[in-house]
Image (cartoon, rainbow, N blue to C red; front, side, top):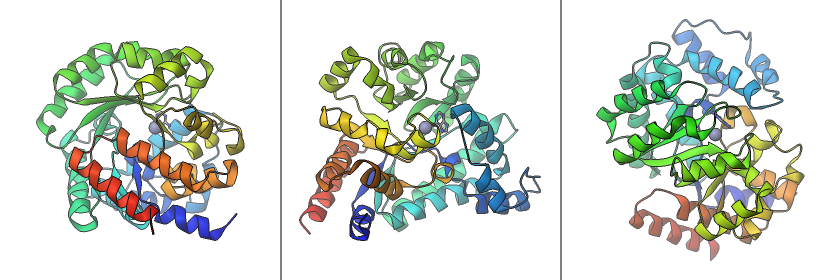
Length: 337
Ligand code: ADE
Ligand code: ZN
């Protein structure tokens, strides 16, 4: 392990395409917001919270994650949550982000959609102005709920299309196939939204097929189970449909037992458009830099592989052409330093 490489990985210009804002809630902020909003917490201290972050699967994590999100009540809370993440991005030289948020986690508790979107979008606007970080925002539907609830959420979002760029699908994957959401994704496409979906994290490769063919998504979130299906691998290589892979998340949720078993670099070398992302950094042990460091420590990630992964993220992003060019230029400048 070399500290110099760790510094290099932190300084490397980066892009994040798979990040749940609710998953950036650090225990310290959780306690602060619980106090601010008089919400009782199941934990007595920050240390107790951190100790509870041992998961055996996705559902284990989701149960704690939805509990944590209950401290978010007012516009300022959503602003503070988003801003704290963006400051982290600025410290780690993350230049463009495409975060997710889960409106149903909040509207189901009586928090209005408007409160959520105003807090988040104000922070994203401030980040562009003050930190130079650009963004596209993606609204996710919770797949453990029914499609009618997703349709209601989509309809509510129609007032805020200036702030929302795409829709996604997250939460409990197993038993909730993409087909369950075919109508809402069709409607979202007609509204001009970009389309992404979590698929092939814990669920089978067949969920990746149906995300592509039934939901018509442009990017797959996770997608690591594609490696089980040679025909799908060919399709992904030929189409260059991007996969937003989350290494630390996959190890924390036991998708892979150890980082040394992770297949991301194998997929990169096979020619898939794989990218590195942090998913829920507060719960999984790190943000973008820590994910790159984990690949370096566990899989001997080379500098040229790191640069190719960032190039994939630029290609895979929904940023405007001009911004993509700027990001490419910043990466080239860094490479030649
Ligand atoms: N929501 C937050 N993180 C998630 C993940 N890794 N998979 C599915 N839903 C999520
Ligand atoms: Zn995710």
